[in-house]
Every structure is written in structure tokens, then in C-alpha cells.
Image (cartoon, rainbow, N blue to C red; front, side, top):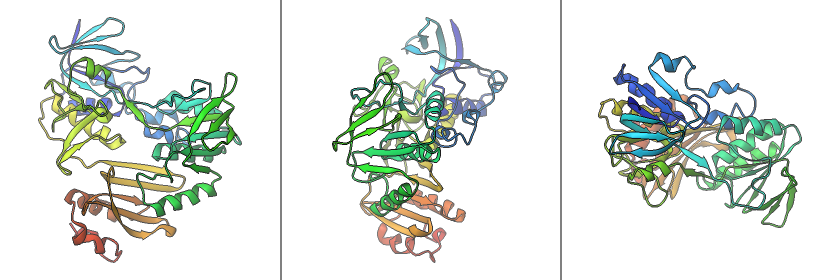
Length: 411
């Protein structure tokens, strides 16, 4: 049996960043990273952006060069799956029978894309987008004038649709909600984006779902709930994810009943103090919102991976980072800070038609987050400070909407 001071399960952003966190505190303890993929640790956002569109090489996704890992005392176990965690013996067993001992263990297993259980969903050409191979295969089929069907009207579906349209494909988007990005943006922003997508030739069919996919071995058509049958050379599903927490369940760790998220404390420790969790699977007590959060965004995975690594090595620090993510849709760049899972009021700063606007989101009279599109750089720090402070609408609502007001003076 091989034993390590640190074992990391998962080769995504959280797992890769945990190595950096460990090495910030402990320069010598040996590390093993186990990943089911055949790649060294990489990040996924570029897959639906530059890589999908062929504007950036696949190598851009990797966190570090191959040489980084042996140089930093890390053994990469690729193409391997953890099948058993024994908390009593502090070991993990791999699918090939190998057993690894650990002093501290990190679960950074992430999530897998949800695949709609529809007739024909296993046909060639029906994709989800999560891996390097997914992006490569989608790009190969997204030739000019190809007929592409994108399922999902949130950011991942919107990014994929923009990417495919940029490649020259004829894109149709379908989703059950009444408008694009309905859960995240105000109605006027949805209308603005719908016009932008239409200008790029994207057809949007809200309130519509697929019923089945048809074809011999490869998808060629899709039946929709509105009665339409459309031709498609490829289908991309962007309809949510399923958390990879089966191994945490096997280990007997505390999970949230609703979605099987791994419950962690402020230091990202699970119900077993020697086991940590980070990224998509982790539900943590957030001090800003004074409630438990779980967020599936790039920056949360990055920051939690670093913090979990530091804490595995003994730093003992509380995780206290405002959730953040970014997105690029055609030539529109978005940044979001905070928790937009529930909101009932917004204040707009700027003008949609000029392409520079920010929306400040409130829930029950308190600021919960901000979405910015092409705003001046000098507003970024005050935006984050405001989200952290969570002021009352009555105190700042009028000033937020006035571009003459200095945001820095509102915190």
C-alpha cells in the first residue's frame, strides 16, 4: 500500500488548485491526485468559450505544465476511480485494486452534466459539454451551415449557442422557461439578449422542450413539445448537472438531502475532520449571507480548492469569499458577484442600449448581488464591497441608479 500525507480525488479546478494551497503551507508532504480523466488537472470554462470556437488551443485549459507535478512532489493517477473510502483505516481503494493511505483527504469530484432521459438521447451527435473531448467533438460537427439544437436557456446553454453561431452553424435554442436567462436576469435584459442572438441568426424557442431525437445511428431530427420537428446535425444539452457524491455517500459523510451535496464547515471540513470537500459538491456556511450555500461556478471551485489545500496542510482558515463568475456571449462580457438564487427587486445602473449596464439585486430589502455587463473597471472593487456589506435598498437604491453617484461612498 502506498501512503501519502495528502490525497486529492478529482482532477478539475478545485483538485488542481488544492495542490497549490498545500504547497503554500507545506513544501514537502507527498501528494497523490486521483482523476478518472486521462488528463492532468484542467479548468472547464474555456471549453464553452475559446476552445469550442477554435479561437484558443486546447492546452489553454490546463492549470500547469506536465513537469509541474513531479517537480512539486505530486503523483498523478489518471484514468483511475476511487471506489471505496475507509475512514477507519484512512485509505482509499481504486477500481484496479490499488490502496492509498492518507492523512488528509480532499473530495473535489465535481459534477457530471445531466442528460435528459429522452428517446434517441444515445444517438451519435447528442452531446453534453464537460470535457476536452466533448468540446473537440462538438467543434468537429459545428461546420458552417450545420443545424445545431441547444437545450437550455441558462449561461451554459447561452455560451454554447453563441459559440456555435460564431462557428457558422444555424442554431436553435429551446428551454422550458419563458425567456432567456429567466432565473438570473431581469426581463429587459432577456429581451436585449434575445435581440442580440437574433442578430447573430440564433432562433430562440422559449417555453419549449424536446420530446425525442430521431436518426439511424446519428441524430438527424428532433421532435419538440410545440409540435415542430426540426432537422439537426448535432444537439448539445445544457440542462444542469448531477453531483458526483456517490463516494462521499459510501464513506458515510453528511450529505444534504435535497441534492446530495457534501456538508462542510467554515474550514471546508466534512463530518470527518480529516476529509475536506471543495467545488461543486460542497455546501458551506457563508458568513456574508448567514446561510449555507452551494455554487457551481469557476471562481468558487478555484478559491475553495486553494483554501481546502491550505487547511489540509494545517492553516485552519475560514473560507470567506463572495461567489463570482463571468461569461462571454458574443461580444458581451458579464461578471456576477454574490448570490442570485433568490431576488425580488433590481436597480439598473447604466443603459442597456449603450452596452454598459449593471443590475443590483435585492431580496427582502437587502442587496444580494450584482450583474455587470461591460462596466468601467473602476466600479469592480466598489461592486464587490457593496455585495459584501449587503446594504438596505432604502439606504442605497436611489444612488445606485444614478451614474453620477460614487459607488465607493455607498459602502
